[in-house]
Image (cartoon, rainbow over all chains, first blue to last red; front, side):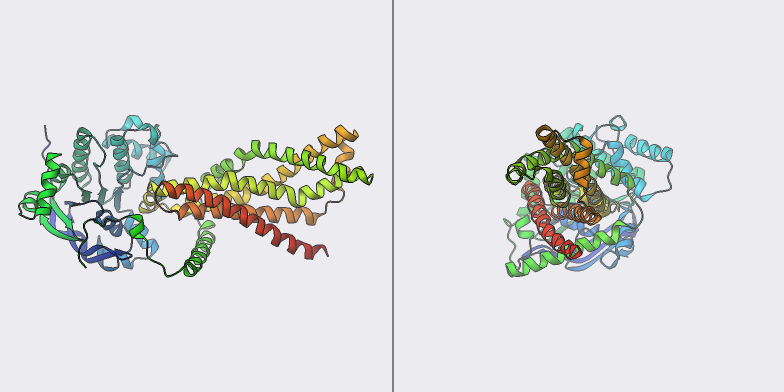
Amino acid sequence: MEKEKVSFIDRSKSVIDIKNLEKSFGDYEVLRGIDLEVYQGENVVVLGRSGTGKSVLIKIISGLLKPDTGTVNVLGQDVNSLNPKELEKLRLRIGFSFQNSALYDSMTVRGNLEFPLVRNQRNLTKAEVNEQVESVLDAVGLLQTINQMPSELSGGQRKRIGIARTLILKPEIMMYDEPTAGLDPITCLEINHLINEVQQRYHTSSIIITHDLTCAKMTGDRVAMLLDGKFMRTGTFKEVFDTDDERVKTFYTYNFIQ
Amino acid sequence: MKPDYNNVLTEETAKPKLPSRFSVFFEDIYLVYRFILRFFKEAFLPPYEFKEFVRQCYEVGYRSFPLITLTGFITGLVFTKQSRPSLAEFGATSWIPSLVSIAIFRALAPLVTALIAAGKVGSSIGAELASMKVTEQIDAMEVSATKPFKFLVCMRVLATTVSIPILVMYTALVSMLGAFVNVTTNEGTSFKAFFQDAFEPLSFLDINTSLVKSIVFGFTIGMVGCYQGFNSDKGTEGVGKAANSAVVLGMFLVFVEEVVIVQISGFFRT
């Protein structure tokens, strides 16, 4: 049975504010004037075709890529004008779940979770580190995998551990890059529930990049449809797909036929 | 610009178009310069990754011992065997220990060790970092503010810079042992007499030059492997290319440095 999604959105407080964002790679214009505002406690789903620059968008937000023009304001700071130290501090407040989980394959699950924790909170005792690692693993339901290597985990487990690794730094914003890509339907549902649980339990605001409409419907408080490098439609899931635009309709139809 | 729905973001479209090969060459030089500069900026500042440094020394140094032992021993043995006929013609086989020791300490040990390290260590560093880049592990470190350059690059380069001189000295000793086996089998020379003859012509300059050379080789091999891996193209092809160019470029630079250092040390001898 589907769990009820409960969001506590504070629309007076914007955590991400993007204005007129443009990004090109050579002659190829990927983002052509993006405007987006994400509020405190809100899950925003960015939908779009593969290669339309969805991942580029969240990499710009977290400072991994530089935009050509436009401003990206995250938690009250302009990402482009930060020096490396300030950017590092800001990144601690942003969690990033990668499409392929990006687990460090030379380390166990425990090593993966300890790695960012001990490097950012050097005064923690061994017992405190253990407690935090176990607590966050428990939150994603994978405490039993603590001593396993990433290669021993299933795709769904890897996604969960990837999310746990970002949660251990207690971020205020979460970025999910294709969280359900390549997973079976049941695992997809589990990941969708986990995204909602993270939102409620850790009071995070999130951007979820996906082309999975079930994921968008279940996790998104708001959906933004990226077409031709711009957000063509923004609103609730129903509002976005209540249109005669052929490209949007095709996206919807294909997903549900599939 | 008219939208092109078939034009998706790929590595090819993502690459900025550059005017010519000439400018690419200078751009590469500039990027290498910045990479080396970044190493010196970050390597010696806290926080220190001591545990990772020890782990890398184990990977680079300790795990190379079996291969180095075998190749070092064979080098000494074969070099001595091949030198004997020429010296025997002049009745100068008693010079074998000193000839072999000079050849081994001055040239063979540093070169053989560096070439083996470029093949074994350089390729493994290049491939490992490139595959970490492909699977976004380096990005994951970057977004969690854990200084991937320091953890991945600085520690590996420091480990090769420290471990390779140790391996070179070890190779020299093992090669001498190989030479002794050959000499004692043919001439029946005792262990003590062989090593007395072998070490007599060696000067501090020989040992120092060999050490400086091996530090430079170690730094180069680590730096080339890390640079190729850290800046590899994404995709599995990039991993292969990074490993391959780490070996080829590493070996090439080792030979160039060998020539330069030999010339410089020549000035001190005269």
